[in-house]
Image 1 (tube, rainbow, N blue to C red):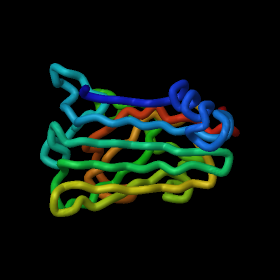
Image 2 (cartoon, rainbow, N blue to C red; image 1 turned 30 degrees about the vertical axis):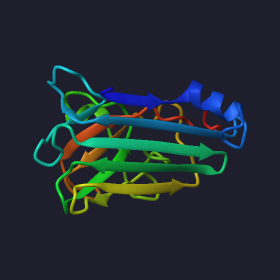
Image 3 (tube, rainbow, N blue to C red; image 1 turned 90 degrees about the vertical axis):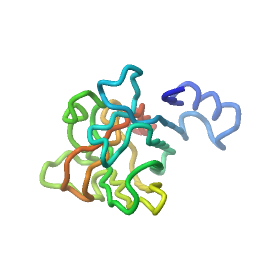
Length: 179
């Protein structure tokens, strides 16, 4: 399988069966994972690399979102990247596309162009280790708005700087408060 995603109905079924410790209205879980491929690849992927020097084709990515009424946690794991490189990574508004700009801007909890920071956005910056793997975790006391987030974009530099070098489309779940 090139890409996989578990969302909504399956997560609700697991939770309703008692696998999540709460009812579907109280807790949710989403997972998206794939191997990066160029946008022009014969076999499409939900993970696109725009810079194969920093994010080689075949590198892997996994994003998970866990949440309940108290907030959410988003985790990012990558493998096969350039060892020792520091990448920026953020939740973006729209799904990935062939054009790196297709993912739109950063998701913001409080929509305010003057407030682009790790408190108001979901930042997952990381430095890959000697084997090219890396991970990051962002915990927020809030959840996402329905339809407000669609991807995680990797940038060539941390923070607000840097070009978009890769993107993973993620079917993020809204917070029960925002559904």
